[in-house]
Image (cartoon, rainbow, N blue to C red; front, side):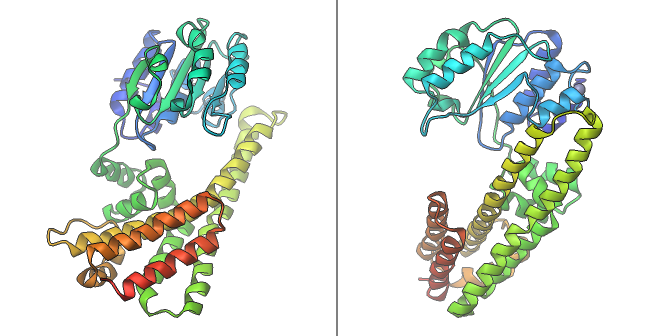
Length: 376
Ligand SMILES: [Zn+2]
């Protein structure tokens, strides 16, 4: 089926793309959708693509100023909303949005409201929202995003058309990555492991020499870990973390290009503030992601050790570090492998509690070192 280019962003979900683009074209868009599927399946991208398809004169070309504004998060008629409360959407927030819903669109024919984490409506905030969700003004489309259908309150879910996003099978994800970057299958698999299976992140990973370098440094460290003394572990951890921060400079260069493109597309007088705010958020996220990536690489390599230690074997995620994993696999017991994986989980938790990444990663590596030295 012919569809706007903006749907090409939706990797591995052609059924959903066909369904939504057709609805936009035929004018059969529902007033409320619930997009359900795992993290990284492309739910938010799909919601933005839907807005593009509705607003753009060319079915969502992906390149006109309208599409550009939507995809970059600063179209005045597309709002992405996250829970304001620590654990849930709060009533005052919902009331503010209901007020906004009844205002006319600023630039487009419609308004699109995208609610992230729709499983975080509690009974109170859901109650405040139900009437609007059931019967929003004719020019409003509400899109709710959630990881699982069952986690969403039935009162909310029953008022929406449900669109299911499937987890992209590893084989297709690898296919997409190879096709878009020309990487080898082994590199694509390693990128997925570093990015927790999230395809857009894996794409960025493959395109970033500095991120691949940080991964290589970490794997080299893991290989030598059993033989290193405490001082070496501390020094090299610092180096690896430094490498994990390097992509921030890469992103800054990209942002400068983006700012130039922004001015060219929207005119010199156009405000750059929303773009700059988004870029700032991206920088913070990138710094955090750099560390998460190190933990994911460590985790996937330990899993490789575990897989290789089983008689049935199986494909490894990190082909380029398979020799070291094989060596570990000959001596490690499943119990010891689980203990090492626990150390990674602990590091994740500590970082989410705001322990410094340096301290969390050091502690993790010392724990893993102990396991690797005595893998029973
Ligand atoms: Zn367009």
